[in-house]
Image 1 (cartoon, rainbow, N blue to C red):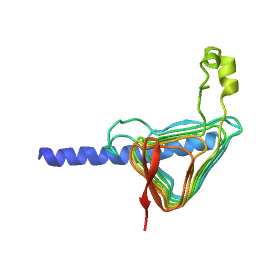
Image 2 (image 1 turned 60 degrees about the vertical axis):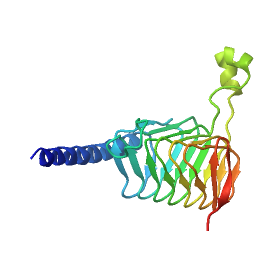
Image 3 (image 1 turned 30 degrees about the vertical axis):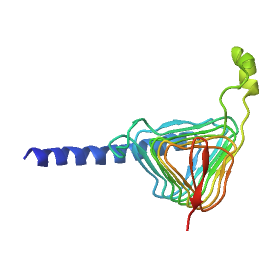
Image 4 (image 1 turned 90 degrees about the vertical axis):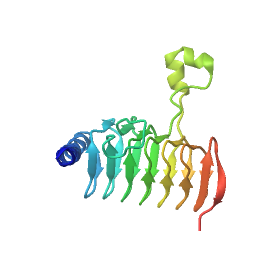
Length: 204
């Protein structure tokens, strides 16, 4: 009896957060002028901070997990999508993201059929200068902050807890191992892993 009650409770909770989360996400995206395709689904409530002059385009079948109820992988937090002024964030069809964060100050493009594992972060900016003198003054720190576009090709899989840094280009069909820190160019159909990420092997 207790097991049945738990299943009813848990199933109802899942459906509630999926329905309400999807509605919430769509409303927020529309409010900021973002464009999105068919069958967008969001489980839970993501953090969405988009500048009104940014360009955000999301393709069909975008799936977001933003709750521990939907991906019990550890380090639970909500999915976040953030853009800066005049930034361009393009997410193409059939992309899934789970309890991860995308910060786009310049340009991030994610291809078709990309899987982004739990607790990943994708940044096209350093946020702060590496010069300690510049960091003392907020004005110079911000002025020194520069960005480089990030490009993630079709069919890429990014393992949980990975960090994708500015200027990264990941080729089609590549796999990034869990917990990796990635910068630079990753050729297509290769497995890279580690900190910093290094070549492991070809993917057949």
